[in-house]
Image (cartoon, rainbow, N blue to C red):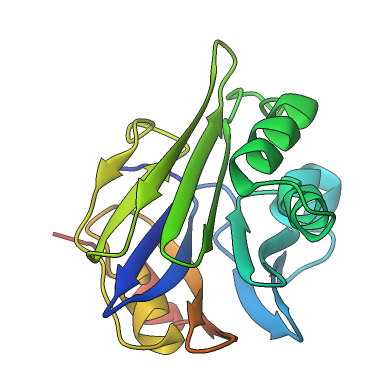
Length: 207
């Protein structure tokens, strides 16, 4: 099943985290890079941006005691709102309303998530609806939303004891066309990780 981009939030032993995976049919030549307190997703060939301006963005941002994850530039607005004192639920709702869905040939939804303390939030902006929901992560577990097929908020089997393990677990989700992944893990301050597999691993089919 092809689900496009994936946002995941979760908790491990009382520590909250966010995960992100790029899955792509049209632009698989991308990578995730940690840059300070954010993770940037961008194409290996900058000329690809002329074909689609949506393929480069900050996928993860640290905002004080919160970490934000999203499939587009809405991550920046959400992080700025949280830094200004807005609750994550309202910050996600406001930003998804302001940006709306992506105006591409597929009307791709914008998705987003955030964690702070023992709470987590997921949101999606589709052509016909905008939804945001809060989750209790103190007992562990993980929840996801994707741009296609898996557009409802649902529990998912992703776990890890640090950012590297969460990023790899997000990449290994059993959905088609994985490209790269990233994560932020609250270990007393958010640590970030990016996972960029070798080309042959990208092409290996998932079962």
